[in-house]
Image (cartoon, rainbow, N blue to C red; front, side, top):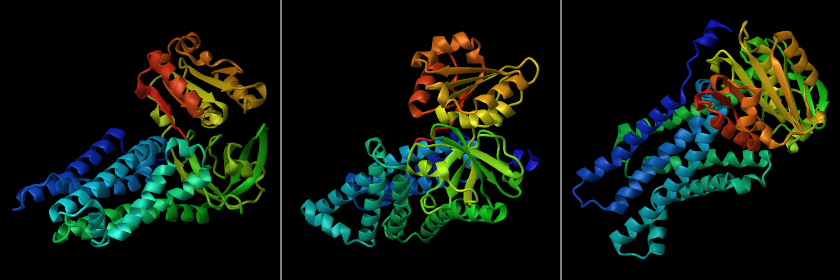
Length: 440
């Protein structure tokens, strides 16, 4: 690993939340300060509308920043944590928008002695309000698509496409924010607000569009081989040029866009299932949806655009002598790479627990056994076993010093939830559990 990579700035979750909260306090303070200094009597509905409107505009740009795929965030915090913060923030934004709109209509109706319908009509005629309303409806559509019940009925490809409406929604509401009463007449505030949005949109453009295009031109990735690993599981070997310059690490993932008629529209997150080499990368895909099913027989020579590397579930997170890796199903992919590369010195212990439904579902069994033999590590298969094999007592029987280890976890959401509870009951402090969740 290069010194440049070691010196790359990374942001912690606590630092990020502190910065976001500080920004929110400043944004909320401004309309309150203006209202207090105004000669007119303070009206709660008016103040609520202004505060919620400013906070919604601020929160939207924060959400875009979280999903900009800025390396300092992706490597320092992890894509799954950012996604969860984004999801929670999305619910907050929708709530703020609803309160802002409702309070604005109520304030207008009271000030002009109008009924709610007429007040709503007049409010919609304010500068750029109709465009902002259309943008709000786009954001609400994205929010509804993200509700758990809706997500279960949507493919990843459909869900991903719907999220593109976010950019349209933000763009349509932006001008209304500049023309709103909180910023109008305050040129330096309008300029600062515009620069904030410009900066975040630049991050999105750079890291989600320009960087993948540059990497595609530089590394020229394409499929070199497709290797069956088990029922509905294949490893895809990707060849390219100067791949060391990607500085990918075991445990990380890329968002892979295979340029075929069926798969080019969406980039899917797949972990590296082997340590990266200078001219080859390997990912392993299980057929779980339309996109991953198409990749089971992707043609050799297919060109690929890869975004990344992303993820913080790497050896850099390790802080203790002994390590426990827990994998479930296709979650073995990043664990297999870590199992081979995590440093193990004399007197240190590396253990891998691998749960699969049946013997035919074990992926990389020969490779894992060879790695365990070569490194003096321990490998345990939990095949066809009941879920209580991952209970706290069961884990402690197999790994008595579990609470004193670093634990890496990658499995289905259901298994991960169960294992997380078991690890907590076994006494493992949460800061020593390292995982990334790919559920959308």
